[in-house]
Amino acid sequence: MKRLYRPGPLVMFFVLGVAGLLALGYFILTDDTPPDVMSTRVGAIQPSPRPKVYEEDSAGGATGGMEDRVRQADLAIIEAMRASSMDMTGLDLLDVELRKLDGRTYHYQVLQIPPVSERRSFLDTLRERLDTRVPEAVLAEVGETEATIAISGLTSHRLLLESVPLALPRPKANGPGLAIVIDDIGEDIRVLKGLLALDFPVTLAVWPNASQTRDSVRLISASGHDLIVHFPMEPMGYPAYDPGGDALFTTMNDEAIRQRVSDNLDRIPEAIGVNNHMGSRFTAHAPGMQVALTELRRRGLFFLDSLTTSRSVARATARNVGIPFYERDIFLDNVKDVSAITLQLRKAENVALKKGSAIAIGHPYPETLAALREWSSRKNAQVRLVPLSELAAE
Image (tube, rainbow, N blue to C red; front, side):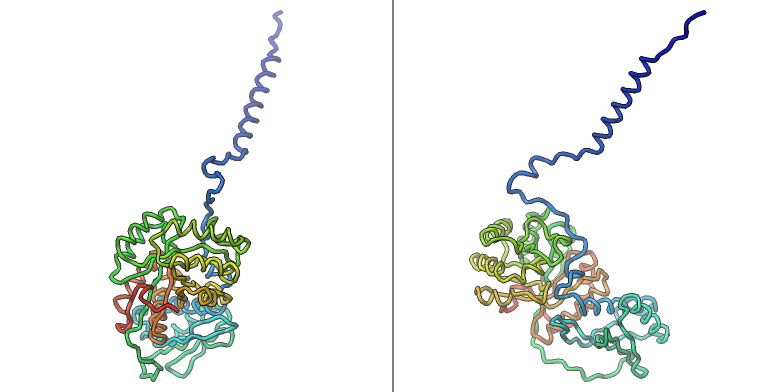
């Protein structure tokens, strides 16, 4: 009888080979990819992902609190109008008043609501939208022709449900100027070209280390628009809100601040001024701001405070250092909705009518570009749209 073949040694070698391949595969899949040598060279600015949520939306800066809730109430009104098939172009901002709560500003406003066939349905829908967006808001009807919205006991909106003659305070205006500043330029050339094609001037604030910084600067310079540096600075929410590796931080010493300012400004020598990206912590840091603004004075630049915190020391520091200073009045597009942005633009022109000038800051969103196009054809003819540099600095 033939002896059966026993493949013991071969099976053993086969099993060991498979196990070795599995181990090698596991190592390849789980081992960290070595860093690129060029990207880790000493002194290189490490790229960091931009936050998807802007600091002024949720980090509790100057625009936090009441003003954020007012904007949410604005959006609730817009949503209720859409649900009621109302004419959105009929929404008219008749008056706006700057008020303060706990040191932070918010906008009380009088709105003319366009005609609606089912008024009760509209008010019920508005109440539902407010319950969702601003639970602390109370909608109250005032007779047959008006309603008010109060947020935490403070009246924020007066809604006129019928067109009635009103004696609203409107100071005489002699061609007040409104400057529109668009931040975060340097990543989307398509939207930038749309902004440059508008039939009125906008001021462009360019990131110093964006992927398309120099291409953006060339386009802006060729168009003759005002160009400023959108300088990243440390926010209160850092590191959850990351301004990037090229930002100014409160932990930096004087020499490091000077070097960082110099490095960023050297990338955009065509700039005529600077404003802050984020910065709610750094702009409240007097020693650091003193050093930074002194460097701006040395280069003959102005500073526009985006006002991301009510504790900003930028105005006092600019006065002390002796450089031209501007301050933002309105944020346009914390809510990325064309109708909501248009309403913010109406607020900006109303502020300009009352103060004699106003500065509104937006971002290169398609919704912002669409709102600017739509609003410019219907804006108050008394308000002049001007480059930031044409407004009188403090």
